[in-house]
Length: 179
Image 1 (cartoon, rainbow, N blue to C red):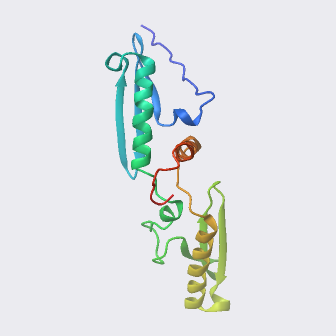
Image 2: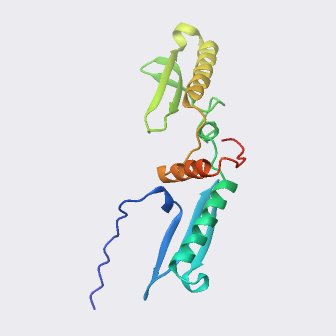
Image 3: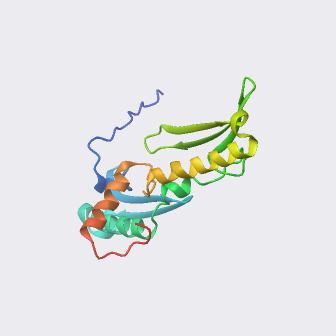
């Protein structure tokens, strides 16, 4: 018996109100809204079935409220804090600072990835500054690059950030730490 080819659905006209909320469709059609929020390696899932909440619109309203509460209670880290993680291959002891030697020329390099995916890099030749001074200059340059980033929260999708800003605008009395 031939297998049924499933077409992959594309998401069109996604707006910030759909962030973290997905429609679950069963064999008999839509049956629930699912809220999924990812934060710091944890996954927050909640299910809002149409039968339990008295219909699709009521379940969506409950899902929206739950998603908003989860977002405000579990803010993502600041981008600067994420960029300060030491990775396992780091040998300098300072995030974003590494030693390079190209064709016999040694450098200490400061590198920071920007929000748009591009990166800022500055190198300091060991030959000109000496080993320790070049390393210290790279460390200071890395701090300067991080200061240029600004303090924004790191969202993987733009819709999440837009929705959080909308929540803050709608509720100016909210006290959110770190915003």
